[in-house]
Length: 336
Figure 1 (tube, one colour):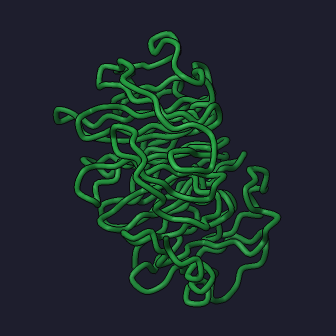
Figure 2 (tube, one colour; figure 1 turned 90 degrees about the vertical axis):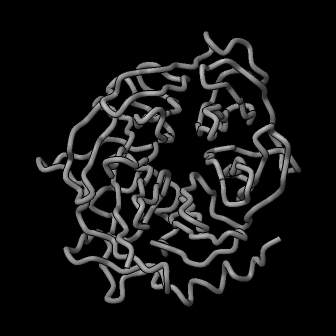
């Protein structure tokens, strides 16, 4: 088990807030530094803002990056569906309005083509897992109708990830807490997990990723309300707790031996391979702004988070972080 003391010592070492300070409600035009040591970043002001000054729309989803083009895909709850950005923050296009409400996404290459998997919680066709191409064309759909009667019911869909062999995992983190495994064609294979705080259980299995840092691929699950990350093998067998004392982890992104965690209570944490925190990013001192989507856009500060919900590393170690927010904000953290 990892030492909880490190969680409280690290803020003293980190540049968690702008050196010069930023008044509440004031967006500044200079990059803001956050993190420490090898995990130092600059938050880029105004990244991803729309040229017409309109809001991005309500965000309650994920971020993935096309490994071939470097384009950044941001899911929204707005009618336009998924926003697609260039790395400099310029909006390239919008795709898949019928996929508005993707609560989480995963990206991978299949047969030379980039595909995106989404867990659709809300929107025009809620409670389905979709595979789409980079133009938004639906290639596969898993729903109650195709899955049949699964243990715990088909409700509260929060996450999706895909194993190296193409098997698809989705979790019902807002439902009965079960995780369902499907083959690459969408046929149900097995169910595991369930609600609780013991071994093999979760309380809001909110996000998931395939973790290949330990040899055989594992499933890394954000056990949000138990404030921990846990590991299962791909057959659903419990491996153990990976990290504890987190601030309601929503999503993870893995790069090399490092794991970035989007924590709903206003922070991003970088963990090493042992699950020990090595940096805190964008920690918000104002607890009134934690874990709420109601912070007005003009009160959001550069480099300070309110409710990180989705995030992704790019190949260079930059991070793209989506706050849960009714107006919508995505932050680019440039690796220094």
